[in-house]
Image 1 (cartoon, rainbow, N blue to C red):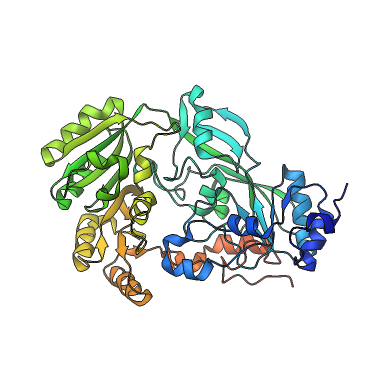
Image 2 (image 1 turned 180 degrees about the horizontal axis):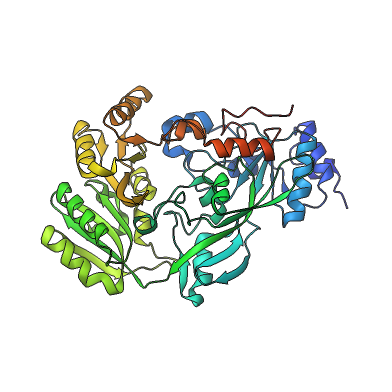
Length: 462
């Protein structure tokens, strides 16, 4: 039974005619039209960037729609295509670049009802795209397995949002990023066409939806690889010298026999902002924050202590309510810890040349001693041990920030710019992947999926 449009939109009588038409066609699919609620739902963590905060703070969808299953979703998509209404998919909205912010109003598509687990097998799982990653790991525990990779926002991020908006995270020191072959096994998507199709992308084809911000199909399910669920320990190692920290970090990361999930190098004074961890962060010391398998702790100590490391924390990883796991102080949570006290800072995303990582980190830090606080994440990239970085920047002006970006690039450091909204501008290659652009033309001919995020795309249909 269709709900009359006038009743559904009574909370917001200013809705456009196209939105009213969509509401009239989607029946009892759950919808929120109240302007204040929709505006709040239309935000993510773009405010990490003072530039994006200025550009995106006033952006909002018209309505927030929560399909219960694929049939609801297809009904919604068909109506949106008929009336040319933009669709912006949203998971947990934990991204930092405005991925889930609607640039051209329309429908904000809530995917969190797609949260079931279809099956668990040795080495892989198939689940709904809206499943929280922390919940997924809890459900996997009886099988003795866990997800390979997750962001520092694991407890609030959805698996679909991670794949559509992320690149790597906790686990990347062992498995690399989501782009590495085998780290996404398959994706099920709904196309945005006059008659929506349901498509299964397997193997390399699944990369068409990876880090595309939801512009290349609405992900409803994912098949992901799993790893053994080791008993992890959170470990903090303090160092007097950041160069010594890098030496120890690389030595431990290169030790294939040491089972690890996280290795983050964090320079002082960042640890001074670490709340309940501060007792484990000695004044003036740089810290190496790690997750090490219990069986590897002794071997790990044998590596870091002779290189000047002092272990100040060694405790089982805890993720239950009320606890704060160590990974929530790493990756972009490091930036967040300082932002809680000082909203004048921001960050960059860097990838150093793998053959001179240590030198590049120290060189760029020395170039901006008053403006840049080093923070790097040890990862594997293309088969090589490397490091990405999220250094904290003391922000003054947009022009000065781009001076710092340009200086990094001039020294061979690739920047994935987190202060822009489009895939092209934020890419290390300053362009969108050709397969993704071509695939978008097939599945979103009118350009309704998250418009503005793939700025080079020209709709193939009017």
